[in-house]
Length: 308
Image: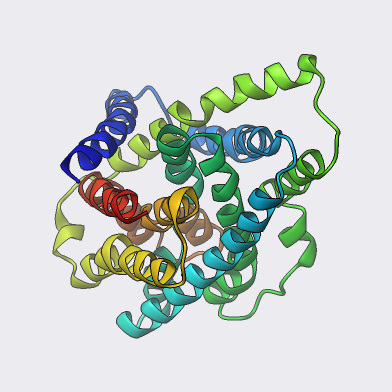
C-alpha cells in the first residue's frame, strides 16, 4: 500500500511541478487571461481529441468493448450520485452561487487532470476507458449542467451534445477500433505529437487558475469547503465503494476512480462566465480543489490500485 501510494504520489508530483511552472509564469505575467482562453480552446479542440483517437487506435478487442460499455454506465452512475450529493449538501439563497457550488461538485476535471494521470499510471488502456467518462461528462454537461446554470431557460441543443470535440473524437476513435481502418503514419505521427502536449499545457492552465487565488478568504467560506470536501473526498469514496461492490476491478476500476477523484472541472469557470454566474466563486472553487487534490488524489487512487 505504501509503495502504491508513493508511486501515485510521484506521478502526481510530476504534474504539480508542471502546475507550479504555470503558476510562476502567470505570476511573472507571462500569460494573460486571453492567452489561457486560447490555450484552453487549443486543448479542447485539438489535443484532447488526438489523445482520445490515439487511445482507440488499436486492434479490436471484444473484452475492451464490453468494458467500455461498463465504463459508460459507471461514469453515468458517478454523475448521478454527484447530482444527489450536490443537492443534499448545498443550499444557498443566492441562486447564482448555489448553481456554481453544485456544478463544481458534479463535474470533475476528467480531461485536464484525469487523462494525464490515466496515461501516466495506466497507459493507453486507462485513457481508453477515461474517454468514456469524458463522453458522459459532455452528455451531462450539455443537459443537466446547462439546465442547472440557466435555471431551465436555455434549450438543450442535441447537436451540441453530439458535435462537441470530446464526443466527435470518441465516434471517430470507435470507427478505428471497430473496423480494420488505421491512420496512415503521416497522420498518426502528428496525432501522437499533439497527444504529447496533453500533460504540460493543461497543467500550465491549472497553474494559471491557481495564480488567480489572491487571498485565503475562500478557505474560510463554509460552503466552498463543503463543496471541496464533497468533490475530492465524498464523491470518489462513494464511486470507489459502489464500483467495487458492483464488481469493477483492475484498470477499469482505477480509471473510473481517477476521473471521479479529479478536482472541479475548469468548465465551472467557463459556464459561470457564459451564463453570468458568480465567476469569482467559480475560480476559487476550481483553484482550491486543484490545490487540495495534491493530497487527496494520491490517497484515493492508491486505495483504488490496492483493492483493484
